Length: 240
Image (cartoon, rainbow, N blue to C red; front, side, top):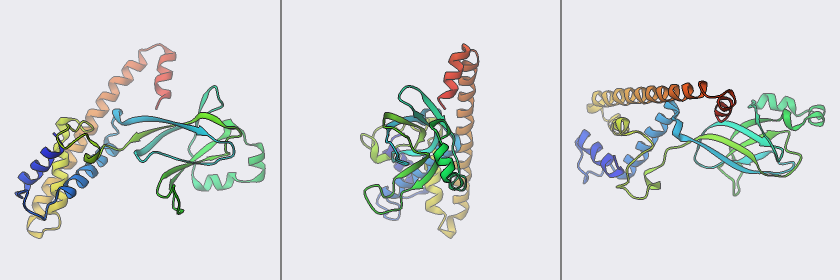
């Protein structure tokens, strides 16, 4: 479907013409995107994996990430030659690490990272997602920080136009967007609560079916990796 087709399907499903101002295009587009995000979080589609590199800066702990990040899959740092995976930690564990002795003895292979949420301090980085490395790099390394993540699905406004096919969600599961928008629009109307609940159930079933298809695809990838030479299989799994 295209964004225009999603809008038309929603209005047809719940019986609202385009002239009805209680159901706007902005509402449909925003909630349809929320539905796709929910499907990405639940289904974890393979095609949504992205790798992003930026420079490591000596003695810098905080690094900001692209707006499209949905889930961080892995963080790797390079010494200029080889990338090594950095384990994730918690704020409590990181607080304990900030002892003079640990920092003094820390080395690059003992680095950990914290998913630090969004920047809350006013400034040019306000609202951006960030991670914190401890201890920070001892040297500048060009493209020495690699973050593998699952991206957010594209908003309708990010497509070339409203007649561009939506590809983030396979066609077989795109009705989920329609059902979720219908649920959200009708859930506040007492006389349509039953209809709203039906659409929510249909959305949830589509989400489950989508996740099942992704899992089946992942199983096929696993079989390829397992029957590849050992080194190739190791390289495959190190990617994620």
